[in-house]
Image (cartoon, rainbow, N blue to C red; front, side):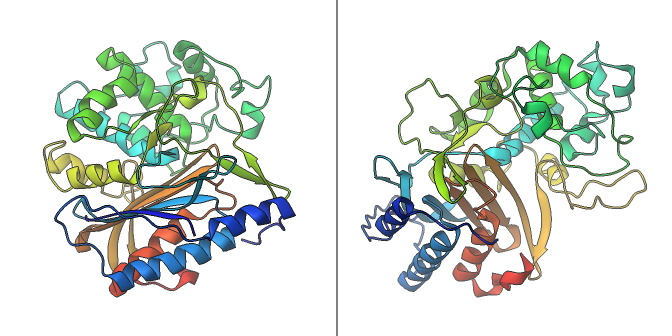
Amino acid sequence: MIITQLIHTRNRPQFTGAFLVVIAFLFIAAPSDCKTSSSPALAPDQVAAIDRYSASEMAKEHIPGMAVGVYRRGQILMAKGYGLANVELNVPVKPETIFQSGSVGKQFVSAAVMMLVEDGKVTLDDSITKYLPNSPETWKPILIKNLLSHTSGLAEYETDELTRPNGSFDIRRDFTEDELLAKTEALPIESSPGEKWAYRNTNYMLHGIIIHKVTGEFYADYLAHRIFKPLGMTSTRLISDADIIPNRSSGYELKDGKLKNQTWVSATFNSTADGTLYFNVIDLAKWDEALYGTNLLKQSSLDRMWTVFPLNDGKPNSAHYGFAWVINALNGHKVIEHGGAWQGFTCQIARYVDDKLTVVVLTNLDSAHSDAALIAHHVAGLVDDKLAVPTKTY
């Protein structure tokens, strides 16, 4: 396994010969370490166990490259790269390697909305039509908190039918924000707001537009100056195919057993607020640390984000979803987590808050073949055996 490290701190298709050569190359060891702070590192046997497991799971899932971050209250215990960030150029993954966020990016948007709530510019019980005044009459019952919790009843814009060539949301075409909003307004209402939970990227795409209308700033610019810059998250930013971005990895998909480069999408669909960021395991440690304090958000705001949102009948929603976080218990330990997938990348952040332990897994393989959540949960068990859960529970 090609490994670089920073310490402190599914039936699968068969593969062609060319890809088997790549896989063989991935598992040639070439480690490099770099200590960055005074926090105690993981014990050598723990690191070795994570290495063995990572090698095994990457081989099983045919993952080209992966980064793993393990933090204690935001202090890096291990940040390590495995495999290849770019298969064509044989570039190894390192801690600084940047991956796409997928829907893990939603939690930054959720935090931004809560900042606006704290600033008195938005309330959770506002109808979204307050900020989108030309939207349909049927949108009036939809509240800000319904968008945050995926209980709006709005339909999904990101379907194969709608995003195909010449579809309403053709992902190879560019649209203005107003055009996106108009297309979204034409989508059907699937259920009454708060009646049921249904994960819809539409909700957070709309949050990006609302942030823009409330602040006058494009949502990603607002995230940059309110979250990323204050926290020193210097590698976290909006996706751009045009910009020169150091340490960017390539995303991959498996098609008929062959590794392919990620599907190209337009700049529009790499800039919506439902999960189009770049980040790495170093920056996510800073994010994790901030979530243990109140410099970024008040504790009441954090608690609201991490509380399972109730439906209209008062019962918790079926996914145990808060505001861009899923609140779970694994092996009796509370874990607040979220996954993401987009353009040949998958990722998972799992925060075992009672244990003050967080595991992040970033991969550059599509979600149909890469299970970042399974890996993150297993790594947590290798760090702390009290967190170990049988594989069958994932």
